[in-house]
Structure formats: C-alpha cells, structure tokens
Amino acid sequence: MDHDNSGCQAPPEGPVLCINNCGFFGSAATMNMCSKCHKDMMLKQEQAKLAASSIGNIMNGSSSSSASEPVVAAIVDIPVNSIKPKTISVQPSLASASEESGEAKPKGGPKRCDSCNKRVGLTGFNCRCGNIFCAVHRYSDKHNCLFDYRTAGREAIAKANPVVKAEKLDKI
Image (cartoon, rainbow, N blue to C red; front, side, top):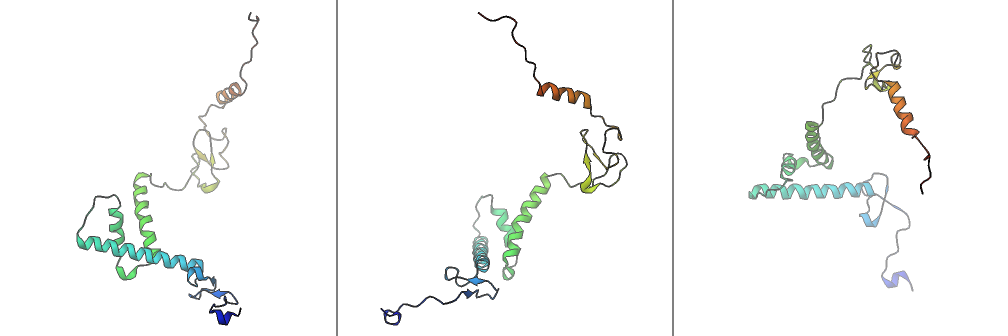
C-alpha cells in the first residue's frame, strides 16, 4: 500500500522545536511545546480559571463558610490584567509564611561566643552546657563550663556496662 493512497500522513522526519522558540524540542502530546512551556501554559490557564471563578463568586455575593475563603480573597486583590503564574504562586506562600512567622520565634542576631562575645557565624562550637563558643573558648577549661562531665561519664559507663551477677545457688 502507498501512503498517498491511504490518506495517512507520514510522521515528521526530524524533531520538532518548541513553538515558543525556547530552544527545546516539543512533542505532539504537549501541543508542539517543550514540557516546561506546556506546564507553564497549563498553570496559567488554571490560575485564570480560579481568578475568574473567585471574581464571579464575589460579584454574585455568594458566601460560604469555608476555611479557604481568605486565601481566595488574597488572590483576588491582584489586578486581573497582570495575572502571571509566578506572581500568583508567590501569593499563597506569602500568606502561609506570615502565619508561620506569628507562631515561630523571631530570628535572633548573629551567633556570638558566650565568653568573649566574638562573632562566630557557622564555625561556632556548641558546648554541652548549651552555649556557643569560638575556637579559643571551645574547651571546658577555657570557659566556665557548668556541665558536670564526671557524672555524665559515670552514667554513660553504667548504662553501657550493666551489672551481670550469677546466682550463688542453683534453683531446684
């Protein structure tokens, strides 16, 4: 059989470049786009649908008591003509970050040695007493360490070596 007589088209001879001219190869399954461009396009369509439905709900005045309503209100605050996937995807994470920051403790200043107040950064040494020290004061004899190494050592040895005693008399 000849392909011209059957009406079937032959598959393209070479790979097809993405229609967005990003330099990658596309496929027929992704509408001749590369996977990244296709994913971005699908995300943009979903965000547009979400924004349109939320605007429709607000205009109609319908209200439902759901926990996701404040998140929708945060997305609606963005002007409709500047909908971008990057901008919208940042908005929910900012809302969740603001909720987490209220629960979490605020970040402290830079780490400093408890003896000399020298800035230690990433190279600070944590002592068993719970403080951070610089390279000079990291040893317990160089700072006034309150941790009792002797009793901690005794407890570790006792835990690692349990007492084993044989019975003096055999049970009958």
